[in-house]
Image (cartoon, rainbow, N blue to C red):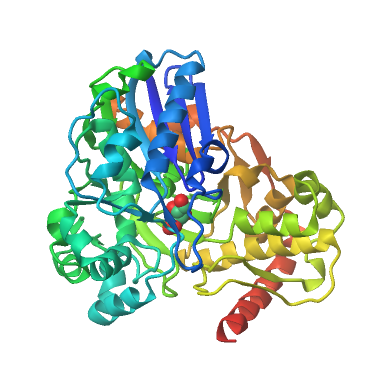
Amino acid sequence: MGFHLGIDVSTQSVKCIVIDTEDGTVPAESSVNFGRDLPSYHAPDGFRPNADPRIKQADPRMWLDGLELALEQLSASGFDLARIDGISGSGQQHGSVYCREEFSPLRPGRSLAEQIGPRLSRPVAPIWMDRSTATECRELDAAFGDRLQRDTGSPAIERFTGPQIRKFAREEPKAWRRTRRVHLVSSFLCSVLCGSDAPIDFGDGAGMNLLNLQTLQWDPAIVEFTAPDLMAKLPPAVPSATVAGGLDGWFRRFGLRPGIPVVVWSGDNPNSLVGTGAATPGLAGISLGTSDTFFAPMRVFKTDPQGCGHVFGNPAGGFMSLICFTNGSLAREAIRRELTVNWEFFDRDALEQSSAGNGGRLMLPYFEPESTPPVPRPGVRRNYTQATPAEEIRAILESQALSLRLHSSWQGERFRRIRLTGGASKSTGFRQILADVFQAQIETIQVTNSAGLGAAFRAANAVEQMSFERLSDRFCRPQEITHPDPANAELYQEMLKQFRDFEAAAQQA
Ligand code: XUL
């Protein structure tokens, strides 16, 4: 029994969470928001503004400054970080970081950004929101056809790392030649903690279009096609319970003990699967974050015939599904701003002032290019012309719930219980809509940062051999349960068909 630290580096923030596995409590937490706390990076939403809306890049030094600040705040919270026995982390998925040197022990007296920044062979990292790799995806699909999805779990996906790497190697061949190591956000930050290059875990590695999920090794032919000499630049791919190394002495400044085990980091979605307690079959999870995601453990390896859903490694063993809807909270926030209403109205009053089905109003809220279904250009579509603010809000929420249901149906499972996490999970109105659309029980847990919690679980699992079942028993007991209203089952079943047709027509237009 002990204390474990989970660090979540997401699109917009760095969050730390300490768990006490003995009594199932969270004795310390901290949070840093890039836009608010690190304004000098000019990345209010976690990426640098770019004239081309398809390009979304972040400065890795911003993540390093965020990490330092979040650890500083954690140690200032009064909890003695010397008590921590293990660390792991969670990174926003798919982004790629290019390093000109291999990692070596950190030098005391200099900030992380100061010493690691100059070791990057590319000053920016494309992140998961980037949509500028359509050409590379076409080439990958042409070269490998169906095998790409069959073996890597996904067809070529614009936001995935392989296409990002191919584009960089082609456009900047000199910088590519100078690159010694390509990391994911997760393995990059894990390397920082260890002061040596860390491996990539199967959970996050599966989001690259490079990992063969049949062999659980980098696929030689796909890797070779993606970029010259890429195999030599990739860290090894390993199970999620692997200890990457000991904590570098640099982190002593926060009270952390040098040498404590650092467990490989994973992506935010694999971490959220375990952090919501949904890693065992039967349950599913929905995370309402910058993007909305749907994830579930898989009983058998299966791919999405539409090509929108993915298969990743489940940190608890086997595989998981993941479906990502780029226009999650960013779209809800945009509608709220357009209507100039506060969150109280958005989350509660609006849904009391409108009714289930909303007169058939549907919205495709693509404020950003969308991943599911793939929509390359932003644009909001409505099948109605008139709506009160309350009806407009219900339209986006019902449409988002219908989209989640529609695009998760390829798994062929009837999910009766869904764990809900992320900022918008506190909206009672949205919870009811999700319960009714899925006709499933929607359960929230106390900790809303499920990615950070999942990372702390993985540390405890690898270091203390504590099972995920025990951890989720201690930390993920359902807090609030929203039951579906059976009276709305037929209504939403009908609306699901209308939504499918509306979405299909919009895609053809
Ligand atoms: C998943 C995805 C997003 C990011 C967000 O495929 O692209 O959920 O992981 O951080």
